[in-house]
Image (cartoon, rainbow, N blue to C red; front, side, top):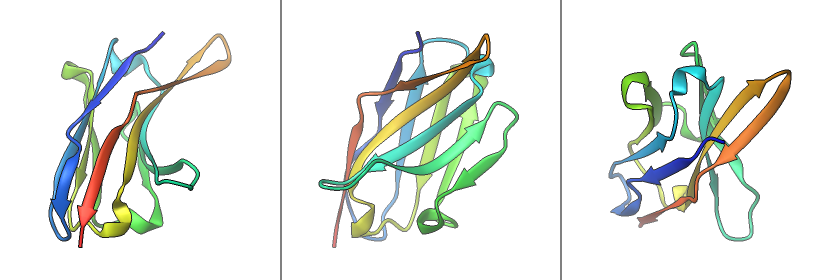
Length: 119
């Protein structure tokens, strides 16, 4: 069971920046992929960015060039650097971990952190 704790959300003006952190309860080197999802009221939870254990990344088109996902294996932490924030980035951001064990994919979620971007 992997436990994930997010932090770093808050209120920021449009054009500003925030950095989200996701601390895992175990060595993330053994976690196949970690990512950030977001969910605005009335919307589904969508992928924002993902990073694999090998360091490969992928991003939603809406955040490419503005957001950067990274991981620090020594700290068991994944980060999401968010720049040039827009009001439409307002959502609850969730950290996600996917771990393969004995051929089964296990998914874990954090509790979420609110990001609010004012215009």
